[in-house]
Length: 166
Image 1 (cartoon, helix red, strand yellow):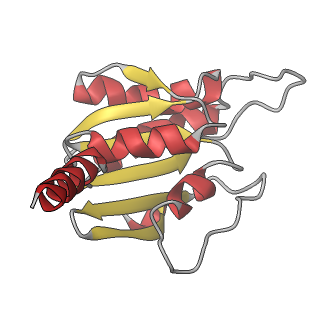
Image 2 (cartoon, rainbow, N blue to C red; image 1 turned 180 degrees about the vertical axis):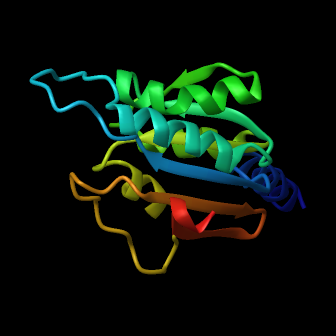
């Protein structure tokens, strides 16, 4: 009987420690078009500023509660119009540590925007694909995609759309 009680307690502890998905939508995008200058941290090109504004328009009725960006000018400038519109600040994340970011995203309440890079946004979306087909890294010229992750308590799904689809 004592062993059964210990086993029951261990099972409860295990299930209380696992991260449950809280229902939400996570929008994952690459930063908008950047200036083509010899600088490791360029700002957005004029067309990039327009894309950042378009992103904010797309997300204006999506009740965004959190905005995440890497710590580069181009990602922060892409996220800023949406953050301003939602009245929230941008939270930084480390693009080399997706495991930590994914766990945080799962725990948060409310819809989320994450802005990353050509070699990180698909990889981040792939955490939520499950057994489905994985997305390849974006090419340097690809800025048009929005990965829409729908999280439910029972699992997740990912749809990759174009800006023009909204």
